[in-house]
Length: 56
Image (cartoon, rainbow, N blue to C red; front, side, top):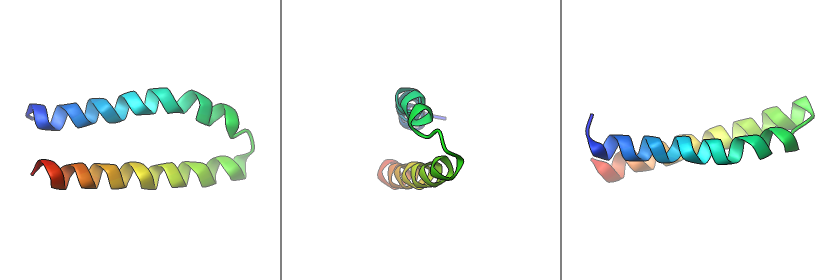
């Protein structure tokens, strides 16, 4: 596991820690929370896929 794999992982975890508190506070209803969680999971997966292609 090289530095080119560690840096994007640290970046994604840092973004998660910055976004997560406000995300949980703004999504008090269950249906809205699941919808937004689905959207965010798609965004994170796309970022991971793009970073894998960039760093290979």
